[in-house]
Amino acid sequence: MSKYDVAVIGSGPGGYVAAIRCAQLGMKTAIIEKYSTLGGTCLNVGCIPSKALLDSSHHYHDAVKHFEEHGIEIPGEVKVNLEKMMERKSSVVSQTCDGVKFLMDKNKIDVFEGVGSFKDKTHINIEKNDGETETIEAAKTIIATGSKPANLPFIELDKERVITSTEALKLKEIPKHMVVIGGGVIGLELGQVYRRLGAEVTVVEFLDRIIPTMDAALSKELQKVLKKQGVKFHTSTKVKSVERKGDEIIIKADDKKDKEIEIKADYCLVSVGRKPFTDGLNADGAGVKVDDKGRIEVNEHLQTNVDNIYAIGDVVKGAMLAHKAEEEGSFVAEIISGQKPHIDYNLIPGVVYTWPEVASVGKTEEQLKEDGVKYKEGKFPMRALGRSRASGDTDGFVKILADEKTDEVLGVHMIGARTADLIAEAVVAMEYRASAEDIARMSHAHPTYAEAVKEAALAATDNRALHV
Ligand SMILES: Cc1cc2nc3c(=O)[nH]c(=O)nc-3n(C[C@H](O)[C@H](O)[C@H](O)COP(=O)(O)OP(=O)(O)OC[C@H]3O[C@@H](n4cnc5c(N)ncnc54)[C@H](O)[C@@H]3O)c2cc1C
Image 1 (cartoon, helix red, strand yellow):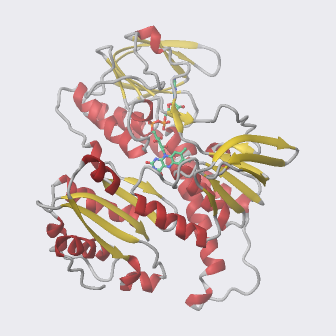
Image 2 (spheres, helix red, strand yellow):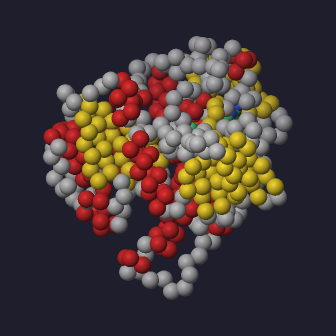
């Protein structure tokens, strides 16, 4: 029987990063993945394919809507070849997954393909796809089994027309009308992909605003911009039934006035969040506790109730984000090797990769109010930047919230071109507990979108933004 210092179950961004860090720290490491490709949700059916389709559909949208204003004329009609777009996406995915396999080999990590389940706290059975079972021994195990799409109890997902994000990433036709249930990140990103490709898109959200966990100003601006792009919204609307009749999907819901509405579509994307995944793991076999939300219970060291077993990523509490899983992967490897790592969960940024992009870190205005923290706000519109006018990306703003007395930056919320990248500046600043004035006094290259961060910091410092 093969023996390891550490076995990692699941090869998503949590699991594969944990495995690399364990190997870097000199531990003999194995990784177990039930699918034939490594990389988990993120690489196979999440972050990477969705971003590939967002980029492709963005190019198409620009060609149809914006090339002309730049003086670029295309003789004839610009057409989408969905099959080719999907092929490109699949090729991006396979290159990225192969990259993870390369990293496993480079770091001498043994890869096992099959479902890992606990025999006991130090032995894991690996049920391979050919029906054979192999058992390995591991002094420590890291559970990184991730998550799966959640559903509403009354919806039957046929995965053809009533679909999750996984199917939405590989449709064979452009929907005529796609209803997206859930105005969160995944629904809006995929909704925008198909809207750009020509589908009518209607978003139905139970709460009173889209992207409800982010700062309310971002929800408002994003909804405004997406509406301009033709996306329809029903907020404060509770879906009651989703029924398929032939190729038609009938969605019934109660709107904000409790009036029943009916929407007909040819595709319905159910994106109501994700749930932790522990099927087949036999957590019980090792005595590992699972909480009432189906998550593996962990302490501040991401250690379960069983001392040699840890858990990370989507399968534990916290934001279901790839970079959160990655941080936890490194963290746990370092804990196991006796180091004292640290993660500041307040500084895990959240991003929506629509265009304009939305990005956020730290406390929202709503949270500061709820916590009774006195704060000041500096806001700067993207439209006032030379860089935004040059590219034509004038929607959005940067908003900085700073402590009223100390000027320490408490939250940064932005929507606009490339904010997914710009947010890194805010994370660095907040990690070093910068004041708004610290950011305001740093030189930002001109012309860049990043100048909006400096200007918002100037506005927060003393209401002295320069270009508004
Ligand atoms: C459409 C979509 C878009 C997304 N976009 C983003 C984004 O842009 N940015 C971002 O930060 N996050 C994004 N996410 C979320 C991100 O994908 C997850 O947060 C991330 O993948 C979680 O990583 P993980 O390692 O915890 O688990 P996962 O990536 O879910 O990986 C878990 C792995 O464990 C394997 N596994 C499970 N049980 C077993 C078992 N018993 N034995 C062996 N293997 C097992 C699974 O097959 C899977 O490969 C997106 C998600 C979706 C669905």
